[in-house]
Image (cartoon, rainbow, N blue to C red; front, side, top):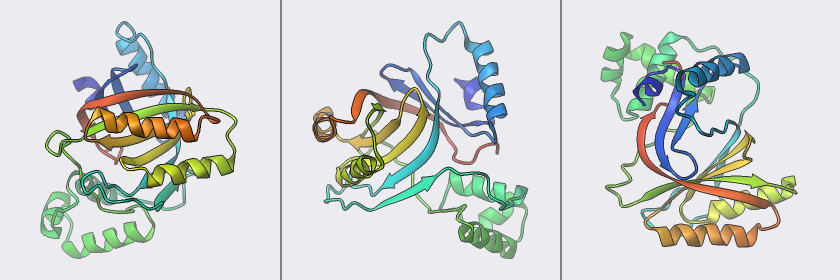
Length: 239
């Protein structure tokens, strides 16, 4: 675990219970870098791996969380579709700022100035530029699931007979479903991954049952897994 966690490309690493024991999120610049990472990973751990699946995220859809308040949700969502690299240039200072904000979004400008060796005026200017270019989309928090009595599930789904309209209906349904806070549209062995939070197993079963009942025509297979331990989360790769 420590070897994987310390790799620069690894953004997320968690222990899971289900068909897979670990979930690893990596950030690379191109398919060649992905191939190099996977080749090194296989060479290092080939004797330990019985099965693995590789998925490439092409769209992230975020929904309003309501797990703690139990308030009714609307169908509001944020969508981020992965496209070709833009012409926006970010330098090492930008990466340092993003890395520190990723660790603690409440960090003060004075602390940020000390950690990056840049003036407060420069920090303010760079942050405004990152927000303007939609590199910084929002400031959020990380939850300790045990202390707030929540369980994190990720559900891998295989889809078939999918149309754009059915996908939109699926997203709107999930946006209004309590507990579901994110969906990834992915390429690979699986087609989508649902991220949800519940306070107990029975809530989880009801959510999954409602989804299966409403979208039995497009859901071919599903495999849930529980996230037990987060070893690493860093949304800024290579920092």
